[in-house]
Image 1 (cartoon, rainbow over the protein chains, first blue to last red):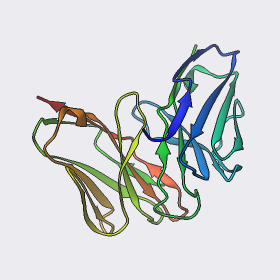
Image 2 (cartoon, helix red, strand yellow):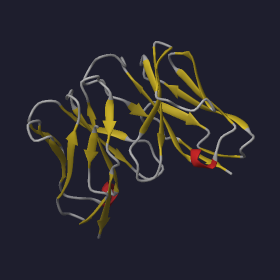
Image 3 (cartoon, chains in turn orange, cyan):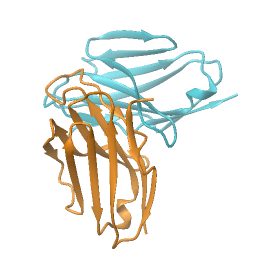
Image 4 (cartoon, helix red, strand yellow):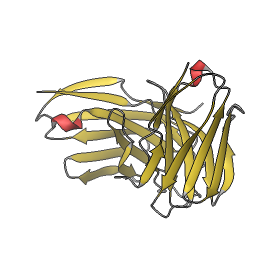
Length: 116
Length: 109
């Protein structure tokens, strides 16, 4: 168990739907991350939150909207998605998210998203 | 641009040894990570190297050569449960993590 949970594990949605992904970490970490993982491609960092402030947004389309109400919870709100957004969405957390080489990220099991 | 190269897929036999290579070109270096990811599961942390040399953790070892931009993950006494993808990631001078596409390791009996 990595101490990072994600719900739902699987999600199928139409292009006009609105849904949310939820992530919770039980590790007492201060930084949380959203990644997109597509087959045979490197992990793509989407958003970073450190102490509940968004510190990074890697040119992600506005149809993805993150929310971090506290240091233990992270949401990814989805609306008007495209079929190419189908992927595994991974949440991760780390101790500091700050300028530390050894700051290790711990991942949740991901949400497998399919957009029809 | 920044780049991490790993073989796409490798096959090995149960009980044997396998070495998974990772080469990188990044703007600066602040450490290299290896993760294991079973199909449909979370990537799990295996190792972190920031200095040159070999770090051993049980059946798994990780090696780093900063001058060559090269690392490898060595798995000994392979077991069927080692069938997974292995992800290499480098932290650059801005402390960003640059990820490789992963190596899928298939273990055969």
